[in-house]
Image (cartoon, rainbow, N blue to C red; front, side):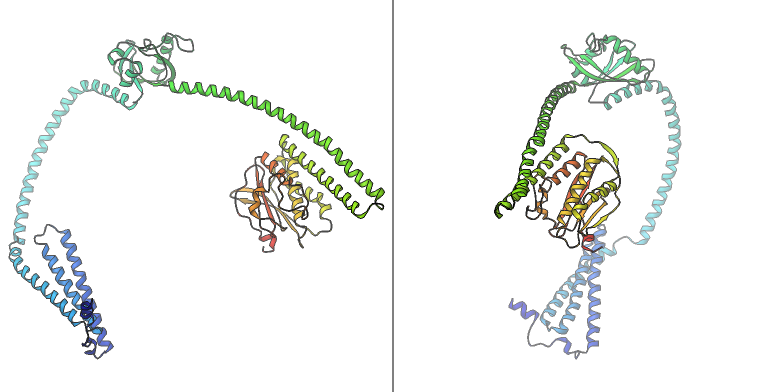
Length: 562
């Protein structure tokens, strides 16, 4: 390392720039000139190397590599001239010049040795003479080709005459070739050729031999009747049924039908056959493609058994569901009549106690009675909601064309008592008509809008927006408010029964209303989803007859950013 450092940065010498008195114009004149020379010297060897690689037929092409090395060394010395202007690395410059000198001397010696060989190469006059000789040979070749062409024309005439004589023989050979080509093209089916004039097979492939368990010679001695049972499954004799299908083939109808064959061991094989007439001179030939469909028949039999078993299970399950529905209806009747009576008694007698004996009751007793009445009323509402949920699942839809704008207007009017004294800003846009159960969809709007009214109770300027958006090509109805909202991590519980995201001390409710909305829309084939952030309101998106596309909602219009 010390040697290299001394070689590149020696001490005691002055940089070459001192000789130029560090005159900028003079220094840059040398720098630019040496740079251009070095760039040229370094680009020339690349061209020589490319030429030597492309023209490997040139003798002593290695000489180009020597010239390239020489020119590269010269270019490096010019780069060194630029370096020594600022750094006095004269020992390194001298070493590079010594290397350049060595390469130059070696190149000069090799060039002296190559010159005699280069001078011995053929000259231009020799090439011209060679071209003249070649031109003469080409002319002789053309004359010979002209003579050969005349001989060829005479030969073609003789071939045409010979072809006409052999055409009759070749015609029968082409028919045979076409028959075998058709057999090969339709492999791996079992293929036979039936000669209708003699009623026997005229040809068969290996798959036919394996299907019938017979050799080709044995097959050529029988016909379709001999390899079939006496009767087909429809009760028709095999000979009659075969004649009908063969007549169709001769009329070029290309029949395709199922058939029962019987192999040499007497085993019946269900098959599918397609027939095609073959061209022939004076003979009536039909090609039959035979596919063994035993596996398909077994699969069809299994499917039939499975379908029968499934149908029995469906009937059994239907009977169980009908029994369950009857039990549910009985339970609903019991809840409707038996459970409501005690609730009415609790509320009635509590009210009588307050009205008749209120002044005589201690203050704590009156509060307890108020709590009893509130609990009984809450229980009554819970029973009503449960009955509504049960009715949604049991009842059938009564589909009619419904104007949703009328339903929204009716629902807002029904909420007048709840919004009295509050300046609710209703923003209602036009909604498209849909095919739905009008009564059930009225309940959807009633539950969603009453929730919006309830959860905007603490807003200074409550805003409730009802409209319709086109999301991913689907019309989606939305109900949006600027109420308390909720955390989206609890969104999966929103449409479940008895699931509430706010306590009774904050907002009253039974936790069934959104579950009813979900069931109604699901029964219509639609869906609902919600988006919200705490204290920034909530938006409910729903479709009546299709699932809701997933797309982020914007709350800008409710925050006054429109």
